[in-house]
Image 1 (cartoon, rainbow, N blue to C red):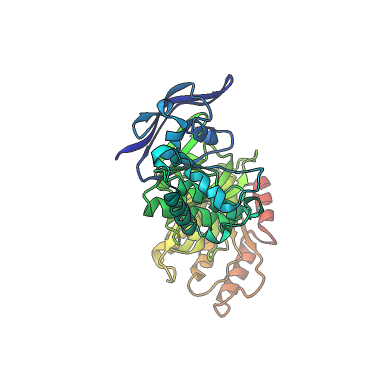
Image 2 (cartoon, rainbow, N blue to C red):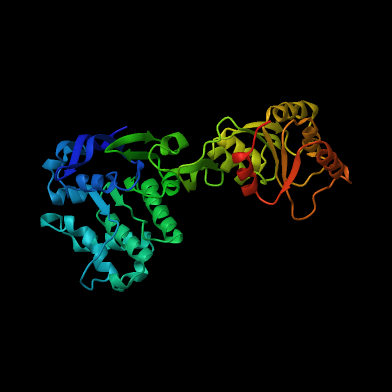
Length: 417
C-alpha cells in the first residue's frame, strides 16, 4: 500500500517535557485510522505536529512523500484538512461563510474561481445535510450542527487527508454517531484518508480500519480493532477492570467498563462452583473472578448468557447442548467439579426438566452449599426440585442467602472444607 502520511522517529516536547518519543506511524491511502489512549498520552499533540502547530524536536514527518518541514502552510492546507475538537469564532459569520473558509487555500492567483468555490461549498453542505443552515449564524447552532459545518469546511478544502481531533467529545450519542457515520461515508465514497483522535474505544473500533494505542510516549499497539481491543492490551494502559466482547449486531468488539481497579482482598486458591443459567450468574461470576477466585460453572447450555460470561472470563465451564436436557456425560463432569469445590453457590435460577440434574449433582458435594432466595416460582418439575432441596437441607451444610454480597462476605472469612 502507498503510505500517504509517514511519521518516522519523531519526538515532540513542550519545553523540557517530552510528550512523544521516537514515534513511528504509517498511514496508508484510503485508511480510516483512530488514535486511542488515556488522557495525556500525546494524541492531540500528534495532530498538532502533523499540522505544524508544534515543532518536532527530532524525526521526519512526510505527507505524500514530501517532508512536512518543506511544505508551506497554503500547500499543506491543500493536502490536509483538520476538524478540531472545538472551533470558536468571535465574529458573526454564517454557516455558509464558515464552509467557504475551506476554499481559502484555492483562492489565489490563477486558481481563483468563485463559481467553482460556490459549487464546491454547495456540494459539501448538501453532503453534510447543512445547506438549510447556510444563512444561520455559526455561534447560534447546536454542537452537532456546528461539527457538521466544520466537516463541510474540511470537505470544501478538497484535501485527500482529514485529521479529526476528538470531534465527538462534546456531543451526545446521537450526534456522535451522526458525525462518525458522515466521516466514514467520506472515507468509503470519496476515498479520503482519515486519522482521528477518539476517546471512545467502542466508537473507534466500530468505524476504524486500524487502531493505534498510545501510551508512555510511544505506540503500544497498532493493528485492526479485533487485535487492539483486547483485555490484555487495553488493561496495560487503562486502570480499570473491563470485559471485551463481540457485538454481533455491529460486527465489532466492544469494551464494557466494570470498575476502577482498587486494592482488593485476594481469594486466589479458593474454589467456588456456581450453579446458574439464564443470566442469573453474570454479575456474581464477574465479581468472584475479579477477586481471584478459582471459579467453575455448570452445567450451562451453549449460548446462555452465563455461558457467554464464562467464555469471556475463561472460567472452567461444563457446557450443555443448546435447548437440551443435561446428559449423563456433562452431569458426571459437573459432579467432579462439585467434589473439588470449597463452596457451592446456587443462583436464583428456576429449575425445570432441562436443568434438574444440576440440583441432583449437589448431593455429591462435600462443602458448604449456599443458595440465593428467589422471588417468584422456583420449581417447575412437579415437586422434584423441592424434594432434592429438602434432602440437601437435611443432610448437607446448606444455607439460603438474601444477596450475593452475603456470599462474598461469607467466603472471604469462611473456612474451607
